[in-house]
Structures are given as C-alpha cells and as structure tokens.
Image 1 (tube, rainbow, N blue to C red):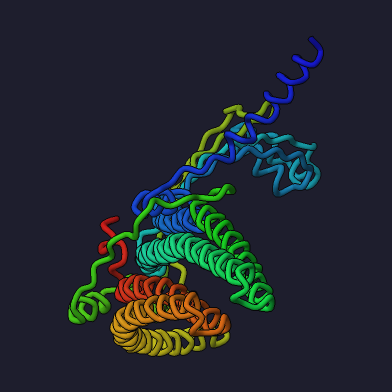
Image 2 (cartoon, rainbow, N blue to C red; image 1 turned 180 degrees about the vertical axis):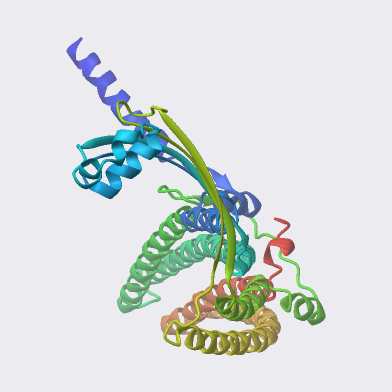
Length: 444
C-alpha cells in the first residue's frame, strides 16, 4: 500500500512538469500575431507611446483655467496685518481707529478661505507647445509601427532558423545513416577477406564524427526553438509547423516606392516639422502673455471655513519679459541649428533607405541564383557518392574515396539547406527595408 501511494505521489509531481514542457507547433502567421501582442519590447514601446500621449494633455493644460482652493490661518499683532484682518472679517469699528489700537493692536486670528482662478487669453508658447506635443506623439506612433516591423523581422528570422535547424538535424541523421552503412560495408568486406582492417577503423571514425554532428545539430535546434519562444514573450521553446512559409517577391519598383513612405522616414519628417516649431517656440519668448484671473474670499476670526466677511476680485494681467540676459537670442540660434541638423538627418535617411532597398534586392537575386546552384551541386554530389560506393563495393576504389565523396555530399546537403534559408531571409529583409513586411506577410 505504501509503495502504491508513493508511486501515485511521484506521478502527480512529475506529470505537471511533463505537461508543461509540451511544445505546441505554431505557424508563422500565428507566431507573428503572438509576438506583436506579447513581445516585451513591443509592450514596453506601447507604454512609451501612451506616456507620450499624456504629453498632449500636459501641454493642453497650459491653455485651460487653473482653479485653486486655499485655506490659511494667521494670528498676528502686526499693525498692518491686524488692521487688514479686521477689515476683511468686517469687524472693524470706531474704536479700532484709536492711536493705541493702531500702533499696538491686540493679537488677531484670521481664517482665510479662498477660491481663485487664472486663465491665459494670449499665450503663444502654450499654443505652439500643444502642437509640438501632438506632432511628437504622431512621430512616436510611427516609431512604434517601425518597431513592430523590426520585431516581425526578428520573428521571421527566428522562425526560419528553427525550420533550418530542423533540416540540419535531418541532414545530420542522414549523414549518420550513410556513415553507418559505410561501416557495415567495410566490415563485410573485411570479414570476407576482401578489405583492410584500417578501412573499418576509418569508417568507424567517420561514423563517430557524424554522430557528434548530429548531437550539435539537435542542440542548435533546441536553442533555435527557445530563441523563437523568447521573441514570443515565452520562456518555453516553441515548435514550428512543417513546411516553409510562402513569402512573395515583388518587382523592384514596388519596394522603392514603398520605401519613401517608410515609418521611420515619416517619423523624422514629423520631427523636422517639430524642429521648425521649436524655432517658433523660441520666437514666442519675445511676445507678452495676457490673461485674466479672480478670487472669492471668506474671512473669519473664530473657525476655519467661516464667513464673517466675504469679498471678491477680478484681475487682468500682461506679462512681458523685456530683457533676459540674451537667453532668447541663444535659444533661437540653437533652434535654427536643430532645424538644419534634423533636415540633414532626414535627407541622409532617405538616401540610406534607397541604398539599402537596392542592396537588399540584389541580395535576393544573388541568393536566388545560389539556391539553384546549390541544388545542382547536391544532385552532382549524390550521384558522385553513388558511383564511388558502387566502385568501392566492387573493389575498384579505396575507402578514402568513398569517405571523401560522403564529406562532399554532407557539405552539399548542408549548403542546400543554408542557401534556401538565406534566400527566404533575403526576401524578408527586403520587405523590412522597404517597410512592407507586415503587409507582405498579411499581418496588416
């Protein structure tokens, strides 16, 4: 009975671990949707974008009225303040005009309750600041869109790396299988007195090497799945569905036209406009600020929030800074330099984007040709290995020729897999450089 309970306990402890490590295969489209929702960089950027949106509200607040409630308490025998407090409390009498009362008043308590407001009527810096906050938010939104494209590129790269690593495992298993067959043939020939013992040793060494490569391939496969899971915001590895996703290749005009509307270009264009706004912002320091204000006040000498006396006032004000130690002149010059700086960055980015799209398109054409060549090389290597194996079986070639042919075949298999992966990555990179990656992958 004790043994049965122990077995059940061990099973209950072990089963959740096994269930938790089960890998669910996801397609590329699903992987992208998960990443664009759960990737930590994306989530952090969303928060940064929301924070930038709050800057609009902060900037708008300078154009809205400021309402203030205040409760103060004062106790004093200062002649001026005591005289004022009694007046505000409407307790002033004829006796308070006595010389001794004016010069040496009794201590007076005053609870002052006030509601006040202030409203800007003409505040050019606040208007410009609101426009700048809006443009910066829109620029940040374009940055967010570009960040989504960047994460999509990383996910596709990781997804293809998982598929490639899986194919490398298959290639290594095939190489091991071939090496095992070579060892079997060498042992048969040696046992029949037709071969050398050294051939069996060489074949055994080749098998060991193939087994080591398979171990490394499996390790790389597991790491690739874990890397994909990390991009999806997960700790556990993520398996991919079988088969490579279709990534369309368009003509060069499609990419060059789209590239000039890339999100980071639009973002920098908005910041260029904001740099111009910065010049206007500096010019606004030369203008006055006009506003109105007012307050309603209660005074009481016995209790807070009392109302022995009530009064109100309305005000209008104009504030004009006539000299600030040449600070405005330097700020205006700084703003001019920042406009020129941003313009140069924008022009440079447009040219760099055009260059990158052109280079990425040529890379696609290059990798496309390399895929064809690698497939041809693979067919040649397979046929060459087949012929050498036949010749070795008929004692017409030494084992070293068969091992060399096998090395060439293994290399051709791995190269074919790598070139296929390079081509797909090149197409994805081209879509990323032109800013069409989410559209091409049917995410947007």
